[in-house]
Image (cartoon, rainbow, N blue to C red; front, side, top):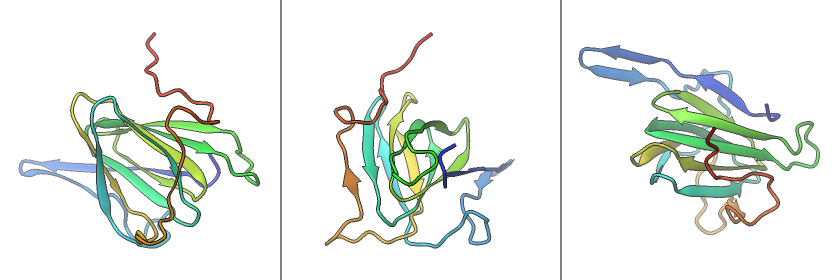
Length: 151
């Protein structure tokens, strides 16, 4: 487990009308602060990676489809420097993952249809000076391949 990453198992409450799933509450132990809420999607097989933030914490939850979310700790002062985490998130594994600043992250949709990810970051997006730092998804120093591993 990468230092500072927290995973919350989410509870789905179904009834004859549909279902309800709380994602993040202000009284959760892992809650830091509220910046904004947004959704992003991924088409099947598409990789959206890598990026990190200098001050923002992310809180990811996949609410439709399935995604492989991958984290890489490149923080010099971290006890888990160099560690990777693969998380399979979505309809078949409803979890929330809190991602600390300076931890690289990205995702790949692994379901047959478009997947939807909700993020609840601790900061609002600054259009003039975004706290978003990107690295090429495949050509980089991160020891990870986005290829599917059959076996």
